[in-house]
Length: 565
Image 1 (tube, one colour):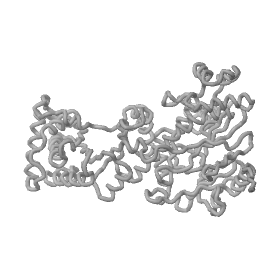
Image 2 (cartoon, helix red, strand yellow):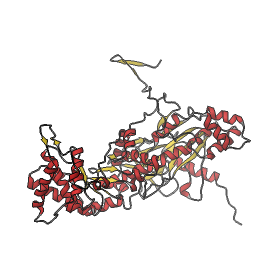
Image 3 (spheres, rainbow, N blue to C red):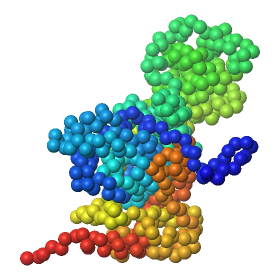
């Protein structure tokens, strides 16, 4: 019996076991067949050689940070764990694999496939939402070699785009600053349904505040945002179309019989106000009709798209007239959206107009009304807007964000580092492609200011780095690059997320909200010179002295010696 304690009559378990069952992958397309054919051909060859149960250790890592930056955010771990927690090949799937392989393959193999699950597999990983760097294993997968290789393709697939788009979102957040609202509006331009839903989830993880994507809102509880399009504005022809014109006040105490009329009264007042400035004369009446209709439908959530006809001559004055009429009825308008033109200039002009109204009509807070901008925004345009000076409060970002236009893929790889306790190395002419052998542990060392200084990998059985103790950190391949570090704080990066069953002691899968908070905290702990857009400082990734010696010993051992004639 496990030791238990009764608290308020509830049995509490001392071993934080009793984990929640792990649901299957979010996307039903993620099945054991979502893998490359060569994983099955290798599985058969391993099985034929009697080698399929050899104990293998693989590292999943990437070689270069994306978007010309010096950091990456790790995402997609939860989906990997959901996948292996429910990994079984159905009879139908096995029949299909049989059709794909050579007719000479023995029946015994297909019986073996029917019995495969991940009860003999262990996954250690860095926490999802962590800031990570090249060469450091994001995940370490240990288990029977044939099974682990079947996991390679789906794992790399689930991590690659998730980490890429989370990093992209974090980079946009970094440029926008902490106090702007960031909205992900990319669904219609995303790479298919999975690309769209995945982008919404992982952009939220990387620091966005909301999405336009309803499916993602339902699946993941992400806040939703959205009002109306140009089509809504241009679908109206004039105020005569509006038949139901009454509006009940916010507190329900009174009714305005003709809200259209009230709006027109305010529009006249605004004309007199601005006639000196000569900003606008007659505004577009069909646009006004659209705004009034939207306000009547959503009096407490009125946000208007103001660039269908002319922002300063029509959109802004029409919006303000409706906003002032709503104010009379006790409602506060939410703001405007700009979807074209010079966003810096237009946002500043709109803001000036709002302040004028606040002053002239003594309406507290009108000057602070929200300005949202959307239209082909990306890191560069956000940075340019910041340099010019703007009055935008919220940014709606789509295409460039969700498609990762600046870089289409993160080069994740899955390499064998040990088999049957024998360390293995993969050599290459290209030094950046040489793998770091052995089952390893990884640590992040923090300095005096609380910032991360260096990540260090060491052999599994080496004593871990200790706070306040000097340790030599070596570049894995460059002999002359090394440094001593006295860490103020040491963080063990790898934790067990899958011990072979959902019931054994393991790291609980955090909620999306928790992962997002972890991500924000991690980004705060990075020195800004690693984060900046132009020429960021590379973060140091190192190995222990012992592991360094071992890599080079193994390298010389495995590399054939050439003969010069």
